[in-house]
Image 1 (cartoon, one colour):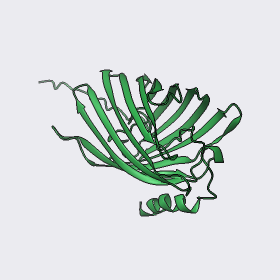
Image 2: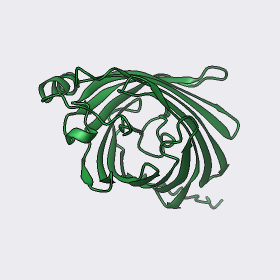
Image 3: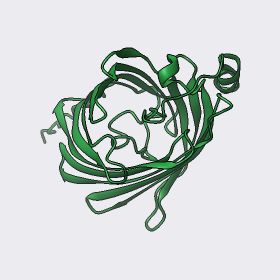
Image 4: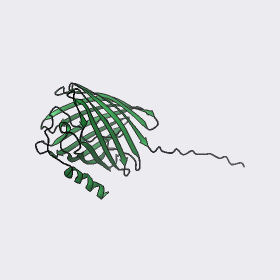
Length: 265
């Protein structure tokens, strides 16, 4: 584990190449949760169980500014409290002509306090991004972390995240993200989700306040589908955004079949 943590921090500094100027109209994709342990971009303090793996594929469409973003994600439960996540984003048709990979975000999330009768569950996150993106989408890597809080009241679970990241590019400022959200378990296989996502971007201003609504349902055993839409409440840039993702958890848990034997007298 120590070797892995060292690699996480070392890679952010060694892989930083030349600094580029990031387009101020582009919203950088930072660390992301892998469903079902999170909302759209808001993490839950809950995490994958030890040895569990989650794989997700997603697509997002931003409208005015118009572009597509495709993502591949993987999460791994190192222990019942510690989860590793990585996201590989690819941007298509930015400004109608620019395609390419973005910096790769990765994170470790550790839940140090389990939820009690009145107390929430609390987790710490450490992570950043590797400098893998083309200049239009890159911050030359980043490093940072934050705190995650979750609390369930009946069928409703609330989540709050406060995250801070420093970019690898000198001209850029730090990024601060404040995300809150609720998920309502309407049934065993269906959740309604809402999220308020605010961000002070690397360009130096609080330029995002996005409201997102959607739902997640179990399509098949261990297969989750998330559908949603968001709109920017501050600058209307993008005017709205559409989300679609599929995530699969494995290995499947074996269900024990209990046999009842009647003893003849």
